[in-house]
Image 1 (cartoon, one colour):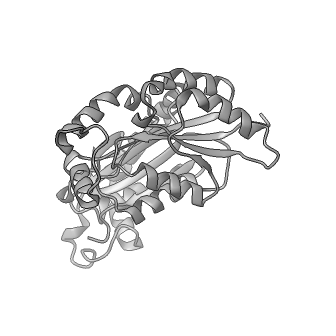
Image 2 (cartoon, helix red, strand yellow):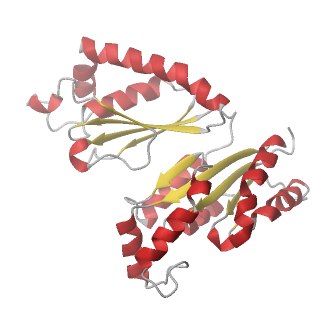
Image 3 (tube, rainbow, N blue to C red):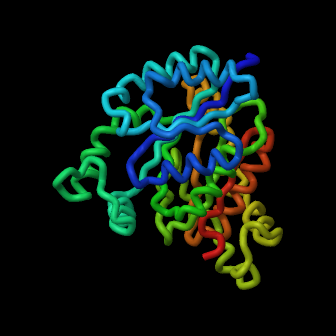
Length: 286
């Protein structure tokens, strides 16, 4: 389809980083418009499709500022996808205490607080956005991000050269001692595997180094687990894609997030190398 567009809809809670995300996409070539009422999206797409200068990637900010127009978003999304455009809806979220701290630091009033507290405003907005959150292809929890990390995350995930579309896979390694990741579809605990930490010559190395990799993958149970996990993903990914899911986030956790989980994530990346892979080793430097 010659006039097919890549469209990212940015929505979510106030203070969750939507504006920073839109600016990051703008920096890498997306045509961006913030606070666009949903009924105007089809007209905007039509203008972009017929514009003399080539516009192929657009990002649109849509949130509660659109008021009563927000209710039109589900039908607009369905019509846009039916027209052949590739649409991703990203819902930005963060923990209440993080949102509260961000509003307090910037001294901004919450748009739904009125005469009440910021916490009341957050609760109202979270409730009002529940139907929109249900439409999201991916929920991005920014509780652990600063603005620089969020910009890097957006650029890594959405600013690569265009390619044939298949489901994007996000593989994350983490350590349970530092808490589980917020934005993930599937979490698997790999602490049942032998731990290189208890091997003196491996303790200070990471799963990116050959000695640790060989130790972890040399275990028959590790290889058996990987085969079963790979088979599970091979079975489920086409079914997720059939239902319109554009990405899947899988997090593998070990105790400290430096050895076993890192090795397994890297091995999955190697096996799925033909797909769109994004890898993050959250706790490898801790």
